[in-house]
Length: 459
Image (tube, rainbow, N blue to C red; front, side):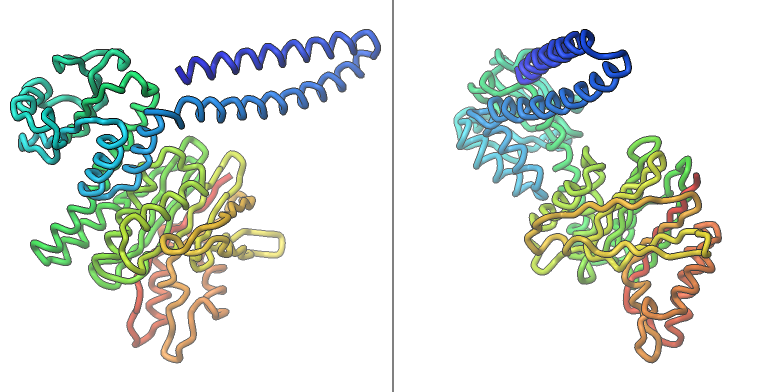
């Protein structure tokens, strides 16, 4: 209904736009030369197009408010938002109870089909009916992933307006919702619900895996191995960008993380961050951050990335846990880098200029993530040029100190090294950088993880 209505209003608005443009063009053709008509008509077209886009956006917002922020559609939308920041089965069950059961008068049966086990069922006659549960298992055991509607006999039905309820399948986890009000819900919400359901289960798997390893085995090496599974095993191959990375945790478990996510032929999202503290809590937050960004659809919306990560960390309710984070959208078609630096040690762009190699710093433009209230988030964009090298590193690099307590990032030695060695291929550069950090410490010990991501841009 929303799509059809939106298309209808959009079509009517376009017809009005075309009629207005035709009117002005016909009017001008009687009074101006051909060049005058071309210039004035072009200007009118741009102005009318701006008005068209403005009113189209207003119509879409109004229609969403009409269809999605009212009645039972609103409640299902609230449920989608609730599970978007759920991390445990307990969180999910709370959302089932508070919204689907209380707001839409639904009965829910949540099953793990691999074990034929009921994880949760509503305390209604239908939810407590063991024969009903066995019938569900008989009907839909080993079902493929997706969202489906069923009738009173538990048979599949294509039209949700005639359905008795719906169910979601992701792997072996099935969630069945019986509700008489399904016909009141806009059908376009169900694909969104299915996507968020799958994302939640992946987050829950991450949390359970780390907690179970820590609780059962106490083998930190296993935790570290699990953590590394969230980091890239191999950097992607890009057409106009050469990549290299270096990751060395101070102990088995690290709070550092990085990722490279190609969005299309020209755009790539670069991520590097550091979670406060050490040990299991930091590793847990690290896994949540990486997974949250990977499953996002709008990865090119940097502000949304930052705010989503912020809510994900806060949703974990781990005291005093936060992350510093750099997210950069590198576009080799526009030759630009859009970024948000949330309190990371300044990333650098090293460029070849007529005056020799120069360093451009990308200073912080956002507070730490996950503990403070985020206000305005500033996305900045800077140009990049062929041959530019982007260096992103955790504070274990620039803030390492020598025997006299001088930080590496405060020395001319650090600047000289960057300018001289960044001309090398990125793979060689990161290795030399790690060796340089170790030499600077001298006989002392490293006190933090070392994580480096380098991207060299080719024209």
